[in-house]
Length: 180
Image (tube, rainbow, N blue to C red; front, side, top):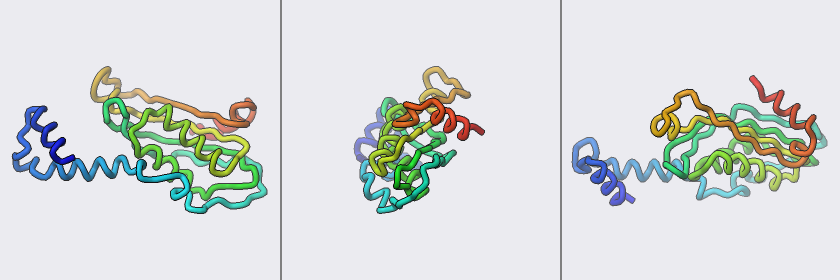
């Protein structure tokens, strides 16, 4: 990877031998491995057995889970907040595991639409809940610093599965509760 990064530096008109760039290929490789570490993770390891029996069938919501990802089209960052709600059906997830699932999928080359759906689907698969809703709001550097350069743009995506899709009252309760 270091050789490829040196080639990129040369192609953009830089000198990879310049003092400030000598170790850049090594740092970029380390950074990219960290930023895409989600490829080395799987749902079972992330959840790590933190599935618990619960009699509650009331909505569980975690708001404002920050996430950082990279778009697969330009390999530029996008970042924002994720809101998750689900209705248990005998099983609940440890609360930190929701954030860890978001991170696992976010730390791959992504598009926000797919990321939103992957988070929702992984929760259904993990605990067989009655329904789940995921809303993600993000700013995309490909919109902010290149192309159309729209500094205040925020993209919002949602995935509603099970009762969150079927029942307007469930969906509306979730959407009302995640509002600031």
